[in-house]
Structures are given as structure tokens and as C-alpha cells.
Length: 432
Image (cartoon, rainbow, N blue to C red; front, side, top):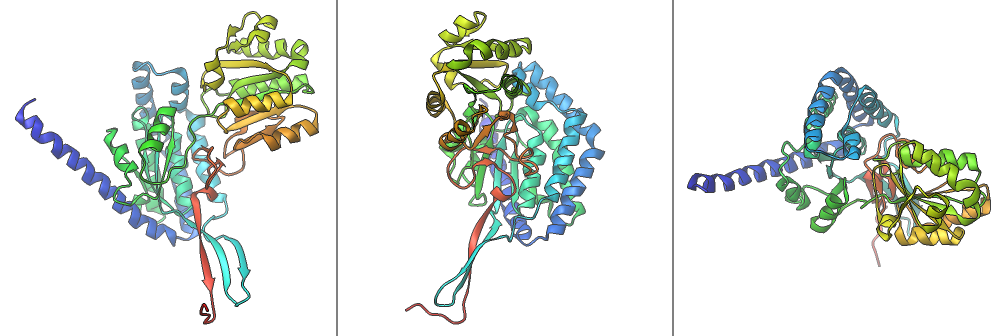
């Protein structure tokens, strides 16, 4: 390495550090403005951004085509390509998502509880913005729009760091968000996009940018989330993976089971709510197993089964212990025969990721036991696991599905991007 190269590298790093710290300061200033921004101003920014996305869809699709070409050249998996791909329908869905967020009630200022003490103190717990959120994500360019919109509606400034594979698409979408902010008279620094794919920028965000960042939300693969949880110096809201189950109970209606399982696995295999393991009750193996697996096989799904499954369905590949712990995110499903409801619940407790799990049954008592005892963020009766989505919950868009036990669990929407403070009103009380 030449002396020049030795001298320039630290300068480049210093330049990146300076740029990231400046982003942090701007975000903190924007957060102070947003904390007191009116609902009308926030909604105006969201609606203007939706219009800008529609007006700029040609540029967004052209940018996405560049990302797709680069991703195909890198031999990314089918699931990754599906997440990355934009088309007219998905661009329109982004715009509608912003409009739906604008229609949601403003979560800021909600009175969550209120009570009075015997000494006359009036105490209220009131929802407030978190402040500055850092969101690190891979592949999905639509996260740029969703995360920006939800953060804004909740009164937070946000620093977005998308994956290198979606850099062109995210940049084009971000320009529309900035246009919306400008049209509403809000600071453009309320939604910032890290302008580099240098991984060092992620490390700087995890360190908190000199205290500017209040919360980090990672959305991506297991390795990304694990790195964030290991290295972050600020609180993290995350899920590691979506190992989702569908359990076909002994009293499952066959037509419902076929439709639900096929949709849960094959509607979109690359989403975190896709079913990865199918559990079938031993009592209905003779009647339900083959029709359900035939549907999956015809749709192009590879089936990996235990010994009982393979005996009844010889074309299935043998499942290993690792299969029960795998989030495939592609057209592969692990299938296991279980001895009953307790056996299914025990399997989910052992191998699940506390994301989303579903039971198909006409037995209401069995359904209620499953809903009560399965300790996942989302538990479902007689519906597809692919409903694990903030939009489907009526929450507008979402940033992800939280699988932890603290702060936010399940779809993370506008309400989950607020915290609270206590407001105490007195009339001159002093504490004895």
C-alpha cells in the first residue's frame, strides 16, 4: 500500500464519521420539531409523499430495475429477489400505505390512563414520540416508505439504512418522502437515508451517533439482526426469524385446511409470516395429509417429512432435526405428524420463534387452548399465518413483527413507535 493510500483511508473514515454524526444532529433537531408538529402537518406530508411516489413511479421502477440486474448478477436467492422486486402494483401499494397511515388516529398525545391521588394530585400517562429511530433493513425497498411514514406519524425522526442490494430503489423512494416533507413545511431531515453502503455506517448507528439515536430497529436476515442485538449500545426492537407453524388439528375441516396451508406457505414464500413447518394430527393423516401435500407439491413446494409423513407420502424428502428450526423463506416446507394438541403445542414451544402460529380446527375448545398456551406474538385460529402483517391488522403499514416481550410485540405500527410520560398536576402539594 502506498503512503498516499495509508493517509487517505483515515481521512475517508473521518469523513464518514463526520457525515453520520451530522445526520444524528439533524435528526435530533427534526425530532424536536416533530414532537410538537400538528396532526394536519404530518398528514399533509404523508399525502404529498404518496402523490410524489405515484408521480415518480417511472423513476422508482427504473431504479429498481438497476437493483434487480445487480442482484441477479450476484446470484441472490429467489426469496431475496422477490423481496427486492417492485412493479406497478407494489409501487401503488406503497402510495396507498402512506395514505392509510395518514388516515390513522394520531398516536401522540393519547391519554393512556388517568387517576387522582388522595392528596389531590392528578396523574396522567400520555403517549409521546420516542425521538430518533434508526432503522437498518435489507432487500425490501418498500420498507423505506413504510418506516418513514410510520415514524413521521408517530412524531419521530428516522435515519434509514437500507441494504446495498436495494440502494437505487430506496434512494428514489426517499426522494418522494423528502418532497412530501418539504410540501408540508416539515424539516426534510425528519426522514434521512444513509447515502452509503459502507458497513461501517451501521456500526456508527449501533453506537448511537453521540446519543442521537433512541431506538434501533433491524429488519432483515438472521445475521443482520444478530449483529445488531450483539453490538448495539442503544435499545433494540427486533425479531430474529419467523419460524411459523400451521397445525391441522384432529377436527380440522379438510377444505379449510387445504386452502389455509397452501396460502400460508405459498402465497409469498419470502415473507416472515410464511408457514415453514406443517404439523398434522395423527388422527387425520389418512384423510388430510395427501390432499394437503398434493396441493403444495403442485404449487412447486418441496416437502420434507418425518418417517410417518414419508410412509404416507413417499415423494417427501426426509426431514432432519435442523429442518424444524429453519426459516426457509422459499418453496420448502417441513411436515411432522403429532399425537395431538399438547404434542403440537410442545413442538412449537421447542422449535418456534414466537412469531406467528395457527391452528385449523372446528373444535372451539381446542382452538382456545392453542390460542392461550402458544406463547407467540401472533396466534391464529382458522386463518393463514400470512395475515401476520400490520396492514392486515388495520394498522396501515408496519416496520416489522416484534417477537420480544418488552415494549412492542407483533406488528409494529404507529402506536408501537411511541413511548409515554407521566404528567402530574398539583395545587401546591408537598410531600411529608
